[in-house]
Length: 176
Image (tube, rainbow, N blue to C red; front, side):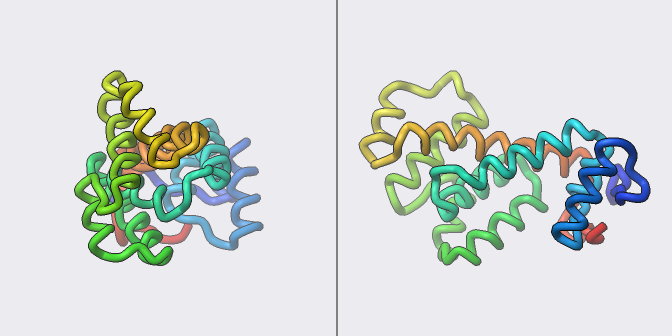
């Protein structure tokens, strides 16, 4: 059961009203996470800006979705996990790789290394070593792609933590 009530452009106030009205005008429908984030214009605005920015990330989507699966498997947001699994499938990631991502790895050593970095950023960023970053470069990752991992992890922490706080679960989305 959701703990926070989704808002609409009619029930939101101030900046949140404007943000929701713009999203509804552009997309027609917004989900419960976004409409519930509207209780805090700072959180909603920050989420929208980070989400847009990460849409321009150097990491390819198939890799970033596997990172998201690994992070959400640790964080425990079933709503996010299901969304990222669905997105990975839509991008052609096979079931075995989705399962590996859920376990925090990949059959591809380069993707396994970037997922490992993402999980370290999430759990214990102080343990990241120069050798790890050098190994990622040896796998062909640019400094930009490596830096983008922080953004992917941050976006997942924000959405997962918010959904867990708000009590949003798979099947609870009313499309407010």
